[in-house]
Each structure stands twice: as C-alpha cells, then as structure tokens.
Image (tube, rainbow, N blue to C red; front, side, top):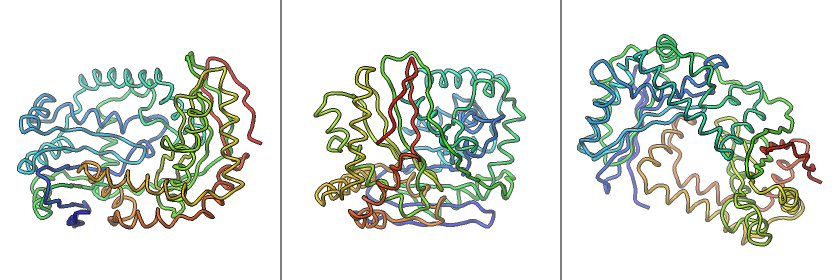
Length: 418
C-alpha cells in the first residue's frame, strides 16, 4: 500500500485542519465539515440541517447560485454536499493547482450566504419533492420508519430530511440562528486528501475564514433507548418490505467491528448465508441483506427483505432458521476468513477514491480526535474470533430485543422467532 503523509493542526481559534498528502495523484478532495446534523435538531426544526445544506449553494453576497457552480466547473472540478444525522459536509473536487480557488468558494458559501427569502421559498419546494421521492421509495422509507421506531424519544429517530410542515415554515432568521448556534469553531473541520500541502491549507484558512463564528456550543448528544414495539406501515406497494433488527454498538465501541463481521457472514454479499438460502436455494426475495448503520455511540443492525405477499412468511422463517444456526454453532473458519477478506477488500478498494479517503479521515478525527490508520482497522477485523461471533449472535438475536417493521398494503401478523 502506497504511503501517504497525514497531518492534523488545531488552530488557536478552534478550527481543526486535517490533510492527507498523496503524491501519486493530480487531484484533491476538500471538505468543510461541521459536526452537526439532524441529531442536533428539535422536533419543531427537524430538517433544518439538511435544508441549510441546500441553501448554502443558493448565493452569497458576491456570488449567485450560478456563479458558485461556474467558478468551480470552469476549472474542471465540482462541488457537492451531504447531511447525515451527525455531520454536514460541503466539499469540492478538482485538480491540485485549483485547490485555493475551491477553498475560497467554499469559504464564501459558509460565511456569506444570504439565505434570500425568495430562494428559501423555491428551495423548500425542491426539498419537499425530495421528501416525496423518499415516500415513494419503500426501500428508503422503511429504514426511516425503523430508526424512528428504535430511537423513539431521541433526536436520532428524526428523519434527516425533516417534515413537510417544517420545510414550509423555515424563514431566513431561522437559518441564520441555527448557523450561529451550531456552526461553531470547535465543530469546524477542514479536511483534504490528495496532492495537497498542509501548510497551504493553514494559510488558506487564515486568509479566507474571517467570520466571527462562536467558539463553542455546549449542547450534549444524549441517547436513552426505550422499549420498542413492532410497527406496521400501511403503504400501497407491490412488494412486502420487512426489517427485523435492533440497536447495537456504535463507532466508539470495540465490539462494533465484530458486528460488522457477523453482518457480513449473515447477509452481505452473494456468498452470505441469507443470499444463498433465500435467493439461490429458494428463489425468493430479490432484495435480502443485513445492514449496520453506525453513529458514534450506537448503531442499528438487522436484516432487510422485500418479497411478494405469498413468500413473506416462508422468507421470514428462512431468516430465523439462519439466525438460529448462528446462535447454536460456531462459524466455520473458512467462512469467517472469507467474510473478513471481503470487508478488508472493500476498505482497500475504497481508498482508490480521494473523496472516500477524505471522508474516512474526517470521521476518524471528529469521533476520536486522531486519524485511525487503515492498518489498525484491518488488524481489528482480523482479530475477530469464531467465539465472538457465536457470543454476539446470541446477544444480538435475543428475540425480546428485536423489533420488526413491515411496510405493506395491509397489516401482516408475522410470527416471532422461535
């Protein structure tokens, strides 16, 4: 694996600058990260983090929305952004000689956006259309419903996109107030990967970041898990969509890596137990996979399935059969090694993208205050034992702690696991 040069600098004002220099590429990925997402919202402003992500592209005091795009695309690069439940990132890609121009445009966006009321009104319609798209995509909607169910009473349970009522109600002052309260210096990370110079990033920060951001926001992220219940979501769909799962270990817990290996064995990839049993042997369930969706202090883990109404009961029983086998007998060494190699391969192949690398080091520094090496992650994967998988299977697939969400035209009373 080619070596890269990693650097972290925390400026006196609180901004953290992180870079990974890769000499053999000619490009960069540059992200302005804020450690704020829908988890930091209240029910009455749920969706504002994601809505702001849209509005930062709608014009500054010196640039129109069109000029923001033109100033980057004329250099052969592009800008994009995303909002998660815990972070918001505004990022650019381009050739290395154009990194200062990209930095300046991103800096202009996060400091000088005007949030024009006319643009707010227009963009709210766009985001409401995006919300409708999710409503029309049962394979997306069911995950929102599942997380709102298992995180009931916690802000983690709120959807990133928010509600139609909130999206119609946001005003210019709401956006400015949320930015002022939450886009603080201690939550601000400038992260770059590619053919970049760390000292230049520091100089660009000192040159272009002039706004008087607040030093800190002392709000804490709390998580209190409550008793969950099975949920039926009535929706006119051709297929039955089904999730069975639960909360489990987040990024901060060492056991999360063992859960990732267990997930791989059970339902990730074409060689997994569920894919082989349901699709290859029984010819049912086009979509069948496990998932592990992680946050700092908690993850959601489970099985997702879509199939027709005639096959749903058989599919569920086959899932429970495979779970039962995992609880009763240690996995074969060959199967365990295959799952580990698959995970390791995915990690290493993802490193061919500077955007993925930028994302990895940003998340590492935000969560752990340091850059966790790829070698460290691989070592953890390789250390997972057959005994750990057996123990985890019995812990995580305890029937009383599993929650089911079913999305279908009519209520289906599926059996509990044996």
